[in-house]
Image (cartoon, rainbow, N blue to C red; front, side, top):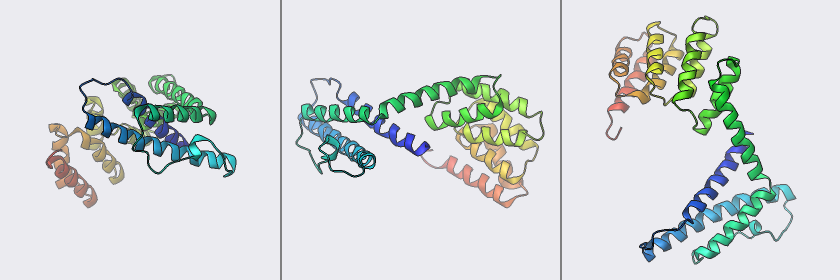
Length: 247
């Protein structure tokens, strides 16, 4: 189911890009820039039509048809903006016919509902983690979500059985966040000398926070003092990546 959603989002994302690109441009655009833009649009449209052609064949049992998506051309670099706009209109019609736009709208509603669930302290932890996973996939994790999840971290820490599972899930789904509270919770957990698997997850969650001095200090410590060779190597590798040019 998730792969279907991803393909739908990819198609609609490309279509949205086309709409934005078709917006009025400054009259100072050169002829060469306009030609390049048309070529780029043509490639995107060809990909969209190919994707929709595959969906049409699956739905219709590979029957021959005369729909626009079944008439995919290998190249149309001579198209004008008007012709490209007409192709886009046909694609929008196909998206509606296959129910893709409707499903996309439903998915967006689910994302909004998940955002509220993740921040709701009255919801069961399981529901909040499921919502958090979806928000991660959609790139919808913000400061408010992280803050709410840190409350969940603090609460779960009081339960010796649940704490490891909750901590793991939070580090996995919030990876990329540089929130100070998130950092401090991970560093405090490392002081408890967790097992190697948990320590490795912590290192991965801390990596995006470099060059934070507190994070770097702990990684240096682990690279030299961890009783697990794999953790030493992991910490060393992360430190090296943090020092790499362009990082």
